[in-house]
Image (tube, rainbow, N blue to C red):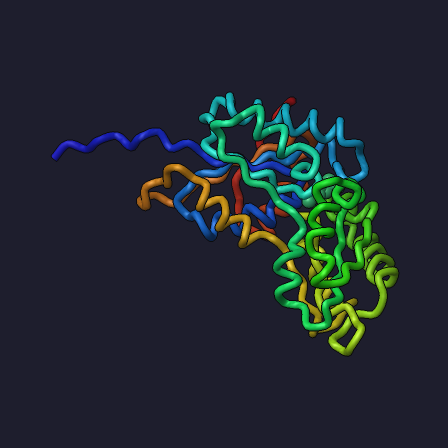
Length: 273
Ligand code: DGL
């Protein structure tokens, strides 16, 4: 019996300023185990969260363009695994690439409202996300349902990117301290939204600071389910999906984080954009 060659398998592109988007990639690989992924860490331009919108838009455009023409195969969908880039650029990228399914990430305020009994919800984000019109509109749409204590966390994504544990712990303590009392008693913040894809990698430290009963919420699984819904074709369920890792700067952080959090051992390729 003759074998028919596999049809070309187009990967799904995923990008972030650095390693943070791996928290989304992990959920994507669990939800879509047969899909191939190309992950871009824009590490030579990280962090995005304290840059102006123009800079983040220009980087998002350049990365998207590159993923659409990359020699390893044009992507069939794009996941912006970064809250800051989603807030600044998703509407423009969708206008510029109407054929490409594009999924973004926004702080998980709606799931937090569904879980919070006290209706007092902490939100940790980058300064860029917090100042965006998109985030303000999201908060306004939910203000009748809960009180949000929103905290810009300057330096935290950068410390996670550098895997500087001392600084991560100090910044997490400083920012959670500034937000108020955490716990499940009346008036306490009982739910904490991790509104930057880097922050799930600090969960262990945040958990110690806010106590065992506070819910920590991130967006990996809903984004992965949304990506599945947006795909126009799924990879055949025969061979497990592969994952290429690309970095625009030093790939060491991406390599370590991908090994540690996702068990991915492949090399990190260098990408110049
Ligand atoms: N991980 C990104 C986010 O979700 C960007 C963090 C940064 O580069 O400042 O916002």
